[in-house]
Length: 145
Image 1 (tube, rainbow, N blue to C red):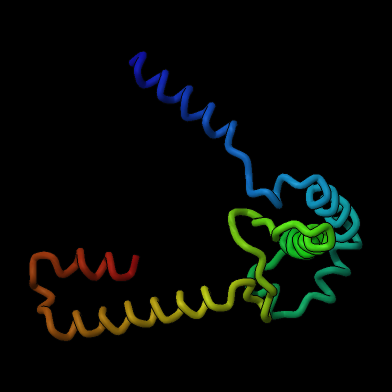
Image 2: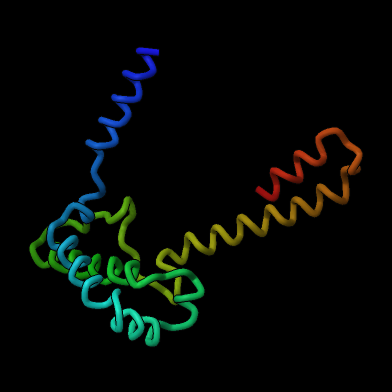
């Protein structure tokens, strides 16, 4: 019991010490996000944001806060480059330009192709393996998961 408590305390302590990426910690980025959210993401400003947001962005789940983080990321990157520093990561990722509603289009395409390959293989499995096989329901469940 005492060993589990020590592990839990160490885990919580390690989580507290963990900090985001360099860009996340940048005061310029944090201040920019706070100002942007105050200006654009409450009351009438939020209604204005939603009215000018393209439909595909809202369908993809982009929120006002996400938009503020994206815009402020590029403000911060610009300052880093202007001062001769390397481009920092934000939220554990390198900055990518948004294409339509995809901030990482290559990753989105790869994920789509991975899902398509899984679906094709599931169809092949279902046509070649009898449903009465002992592991059939398990394999189908894992394929959907």
